[in-house]
Length: 309
Image (tube, rainbow, N blue to C red; front, side):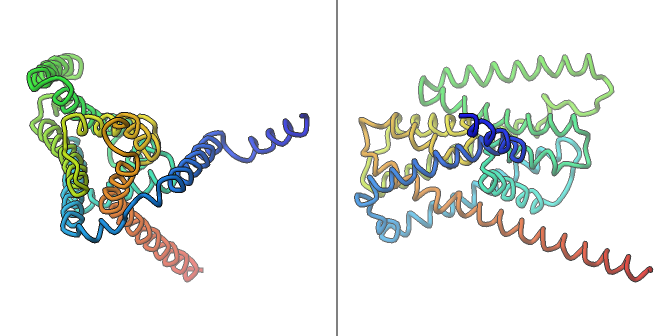
């Protein structure tokens, strides 16, 4: 027992606790994947992806549209704080943040941490506020759609109106306590455009799942869309990259009486293959190009400094 305790102490000294936690989650996730693939792999017909190639192209096209909208939300967030750069720059930021989220197995915290490092030309306070605002926009859109599917359009609209009243209240508070601040965040038209685009992005996610379920001959119901939306929220709260595991298992549980497990598993693999994996590869490519450029700049600087002496 003492040997195990001393071994644990040596590991703690060399490896941060956060890394150990991530490694434990990764092992659990790997075991989860192996278990489900062994149990359901033979019952999944992956040839459907090629047979329904038009649906696959539609999912891929929606993934490109989703990427464009998410990058536009980042661009508008930059405009809101006076940070103006080319749109393509924000597209790269979104792809790389997703790559960081998956490659480091750090979840949304890793993606947000990358964004905090990225916005170097604004103050630390503004960086945190901007990241908080971006997450807040997604949460607001998520709750709006969740209330729409779970209750009714009237309840969802009431939530939106309440949110707008809260924005106007915060705007008055900001004007009173920070009169020197020129930009009014809570009354700026850009903020409402970001909310609208976030709603569209969630709609694209639901449409992708609807296309997959329709391809395998299943009717899309309000319960199905609501369950997928809820599983997405649980996956985000789990801080696992793309909600891997948490999103899948919660969707299995919510639809356990409506759909076979292998159908749900296949649908999620199909959607991720033509959407998330595409953005992940782009993020990896942009990261590689950035590292090679930095390496060349470092070599040039070292050559220049050596020539001086």
